[in-house]
Image (tube, rainbow, N blue to C red; front, side, top):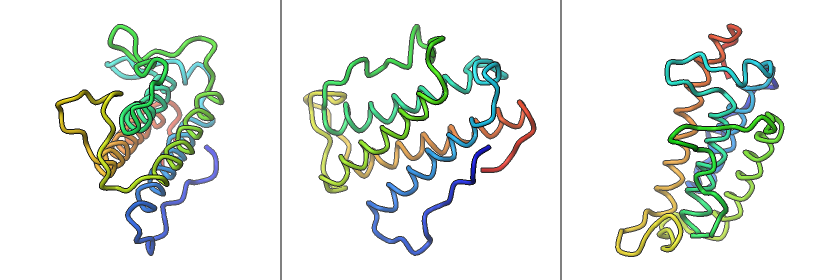
Length: 170
């Protein structure tokens, strides 16, 4: 695994910066969990559900895009559900760990740009993920939800990594 990710400073009190810092932290945790796994381990499932580590990584790339760009901003993004095919997460044979980790961090940079120009209390725009007539969530709610997704899936990768080669920790 690569160098350990560092949790945000305990003195950080600004809610927006705290959420963004924890999102950055969990993106690094995810990347670290996958670093050092062989190509075979990245593309093989060890779980009854059948997902592979690369599929989970691609899901996280698309998940953040769905919630921030397509969701909060209502941007028209190509293939908002591009991580799924027939109800399952999918990764093509030409998609690499390096490319997906780069996309993960690019998504994080885009999230920071979006959040910098908004207030946590701002509601998501209508027209992307959210249809007219349903109350859209606030930016704060979306960021907490995305953080929850990262934390939950980092835990899943803890188990997968331990099963693959015994490595534990951040």
